[in-house]
Amino acid sequence: MFLAIREMRKEKLRYGLVIAVIALISFLIFILSALALGLSNENTSAVTSWQVRHVAMSNDANGNLAQSLLPQDKVTQLIDHQPHSAPIGVAQTILKFKRQRVATTFIGFLPDSRYGKRVSLAAGRLPKSSQEVVVSEKLRQSGLRLGDQITIGLLPQKLTVVGFVKNAAYNMSPVVYGDLHHWPAIKGVTSAFYASGVISDEPLTHVAGTKVYTRGALFNKMPGYAAQNMTFELMIGFLVVISIVVVAIFLYILTMQKLPNLAVLRTQGIPSRYLVFNTLSETAMIMTSAVVIGLLACLLSSLAIPSVVPMYFNFQLILAVGLGLIVAGLLAAFIPIRLIVKIEPKQGIGG
Amino acid sequence: MHALKLDHVSKIYGQDSNRVVALDDISFEAKQGELTLILGPSGSGKSTLLTIIGGLQSPTQGTVQVNDQPIMMDNRQDADAFRLNQVGFVLQSHSLVPFLTVQQQFDLVDHVKKTGNLNASSFQRYLTILGIESLGDKYPSELSGGQAQRVAIARALYTNPDFILADEPTAALDSARVQKVGALFQQIAVANKKSVVIVTHDLRLKQFADHIYTIEDGHIHQEK
View 1 (cartoon, chains in turn yellow, blue):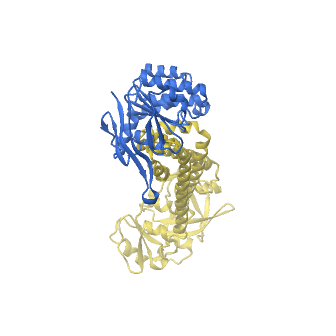
View 2: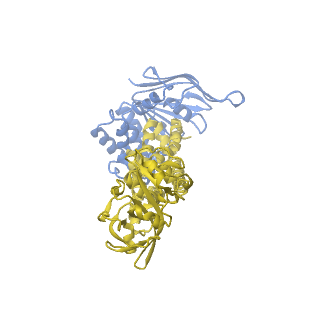
View 3: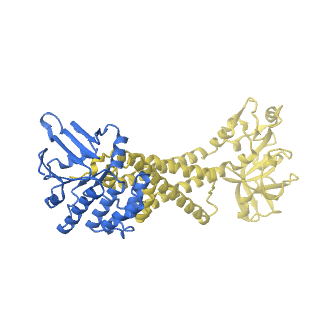
């Protein structure tokens, strides 16, 4: 580390430029990770907030809860002897208030449903009657306020907003939580259909004409969810590979430039392992500085990015991405390390 | 008494039609308190001889002994330890690490070799003799050729080695500086009880040598 610190201090511009390039790559990786997580949350945050593990719906819905229609008898069979289960109604529809129209997802629970009570309130209170709803706090940005009257879907009567909820997004739209009994009218289906599905935090028994999905499978069946996640994962993966290549090239060039000096040190009896450890220290310092700068730039940028761009910072993800980049840099250091190990001490003798 | 002894050493590169005899049956001894000069033109085998004396490569035939013990070149760590602890190299170029100040060149030695280096008073004395005591915060790029060479000599002495091996130490120096460097090596040998071996083609150093050998086409002859 002694050599690494002195060299970086002496060659500030050279190492500054190297750090700047890697910081830009790490900035991009952090931004993409935050966007990927933000977009993922826009699909899943509502379901995650209910803490359910299994969802049953009609076979024909192909895993899309919003397309599922279950009659009363199927719901009864699914929840029979399943104390943890509860029916749920999902309808992608338009919310109207004042002169605004917003695409939302209506989610209906029975008034006593345990899952409806698991949502996290940002303001107001939970509904006390079927005429009251709580809505995603994102709808505040559209001008919705506590006490406002709203019309939703094809439901003729107006409902009153009594609370705003955090983490309430489903398949990219803000959620309106209300009474399940309104669901057929909102969706515009006959009262022969009772709910979209049944949710539970315990495994559900299979009933003919229905299919049970795990929470993960439900997410992957959401339209666009898997493709979107895969796209981000590929971009982030490629950027990590690019960062490994860039670090390897920089370290290779830097090591090649000082090879005559390293050969002299080997001639003088400085062990290879000292020079190898020095290169690893140098790499760790470059990568750590670049990752910290990239992260700070990302956090600052997030303040300037419009709130409609969904970015979500998760400490564990940031830590994992940062450490992953540092480890990737250390892996890249094996190319210059190979050069150093191959130095013959007699190379330091000229003539 | 420290002594470095080569006994019937040969170094042969390649085989058959590519066979090159770089050193042919060379024997000589460098003793403590003496300056040994090995003179020869380019391509005579000087550098090969220096690499063998310095434990940087093994001879094809013959033995190299330090204090009557053969140098063990097979083990890389032992060879590194031998060069670090017992040999001080003064090389032609790139001798100093460019991104370390003069003082840091010695700090680096302390990092790698924790014990047995010169104590502060001895080190200061050497710096004064070499006239580089005020250059501690200078980088090699800020030094003249002569100053850099003297720092390299101090660096070689700092580990307090038994042997000083110098490769063309006066290659870039004018006659006045050659006289000073030659006298310095002589002083190091005599006053500090080191065995100094200088490999060079610079005849101006002959006056300082206790023993002079000439090497040509891999053969060595004692001149003095």
